[in-house]
Image 1: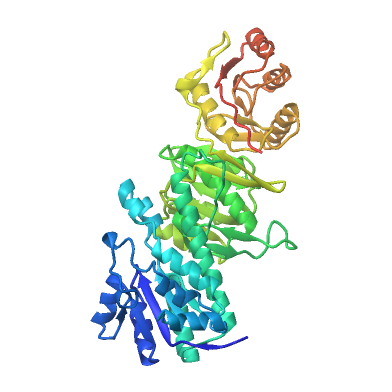
Image 2 (image 1 turned 90 degrees about the horizontal axis):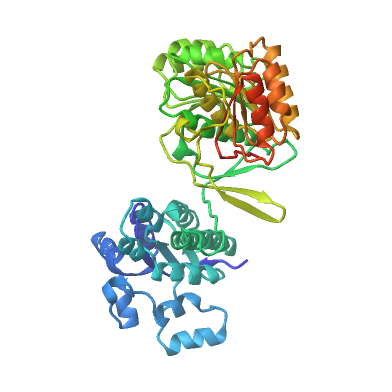
Length: 509
């Protein structure tokens, strides 16, 4: 691999943070520096000589700065092949300077979009010259080093200092890879802005925040997480999260968002499903009653609250081996207790909006769908039976439906007094799901007399309402929509069960 000694550099950046040491080092190495606009002024203010690009191109910056570096004398200096006799001759013929380093930091397009700026302001933050410089320099990594982001300033400075202005082909190739990562991510962000209504059937996903996990679902599988975890959580304590932890955390957060701003609510999840959930006047009681839903499955689970975890609740949690505890906040004395287990992961859930699109791999491609933003409400219920659900039953029905929405299909959820009694999860038959839930509830000594039942999809036959009735359940919530709905309605009418339709199916596969 050939080494190159840097003799010239073109610098045109948005962010100047950390740039000064690089400029000073380049100057110490007697490197000729070319620059434009604000970057040129920044370098001059450091007392360092800089050649304006206009002096090279004999052309001023025009169109309010939209066109500065887009010129053959600039791109010829970057794209020439230094070992190519014809290229070398043309540089001499057309008086084109050799450029060994290109340092660029693009206009902050994504930050401008996120700020809620006007469309015109956003359009002006689509970098043209900068992105072109990056692509040219990265393409010609055989001769040119491309520093494509403020995030890489420190690495480049270290390279200058340790190698005294010399780069290897491997160095340049690594910076080129980073550059194409920057350019592809930038273009994806722009495309997604223009295609926000998804009129063009094309998917562009680009995540720069990648993290290598210990392994995937099992130790023999590699695992990675790509996303901004710190945007959603503030981690206070504990070991690194695993692949399975992250899946459970995702399920926990999406479930608890259904109870945001409600009375104190606590949930315990295992393998992406709630095994305990309760809503009470105090968080301590909510936790105690959530744990009672299935104290066996809770071992090694993920715990989540919609309210600050206080000392009394923390003391109860501390008795349980659990992987993760999530809450909007923790009192100081609660933290002191919960940090008593060094591996226990403690997370503060920040107040943010979750993504509105769900993406998952499928066959040799991906499936994409809108987030399920429909939550069943009292106002949306349609009573279909002669027996009317009481106020307490209606509250329990909505409570159960929220849990059902976030439980693997086929699912049945049984609840009473805003406590999850049991659920049947991921069954191939809805009858099996119901029988599983009833068996589980009874094994933990729940009295199902007066309990309610929620189903994620309609009943094609009356068998489920009959089984539920015989178990003591008095009210049912389901989407409706089966051609045989009347059979279930008739059974409920004959046996004085209340049933309501939501009109919305909540499959979760």
